[in-house]
Length: 380
Image (cartoon, rainbow, N blue to C red):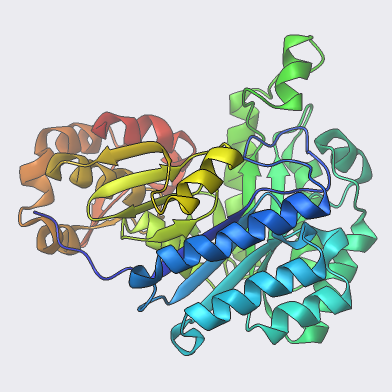
């Protein structure tokens, strides 16, 4: 049976936004102040229910939605509650997602006051037309001001999210966003291809014939050229969509990719412990009722067999450019990676879709990362 470390990562979901972007399918909503205040009250109650799991927390990630869309008093109420329930002296990375328009100096100082030391800014693009297509209402200047205010407040660990594969996209266009991000001197950049998801405004455009996805060959060219371009600026490509300067890889997200236990709170949040994957109920009324009854309602609850755990170890680990740690796999599951998946691995190696490095890591070759999903699907 697999062996795991204690729970060291905590995710907190804030489902509110000030505006719904065309492409987003995360659980989010527009809401009035009172609805947000009630949600924060119940987040704090859920934190108390989860107290037994919070003694060893080393990373906290507040995501959404847009957490910084909360009014400052509500955000402070949440951050103060976290500080009282988690030993922040043990926390080495404390992240929050943010919209550029929210990051005035007052908000940035508030984040710093409560020991947040990493901010992920949803810039998506610096180009006016691209931002308009994505449903973003900030400007290039807003993005620059946001980063400036974060640095002024003393928060230096900053990520910028960018999106490529918009209609008629090509690397020479996307490169302009990469140049701007590098110019800002942030330590981490995440680059995501625009994906068509159901239940989004973009999907509605697609059904109406107003949008079509960019050709995959063009997407691949943008992806591989991005990898090379960011390397020139000192950004190490460490996960399929993520690039960091030395020492600035996302410790929290590596918890997911290393297939370790983590806790989460909030409606629709997902977490993993005791070999079970949970997703909280999406419906706020039922979410509140579950907390009031001291019995959380789950949208999904899935007990993983030992084989399931090993499959996830491979699939999640192959997201990392370094790949799956073969020795760690053996220690964790009591069998070698070859005993578990030898036939699949050998077949993929023969097809040059996987390689083994120094008998230590099983990884996807750099020139095959764009088709990683099809490779990882062989282990399902």
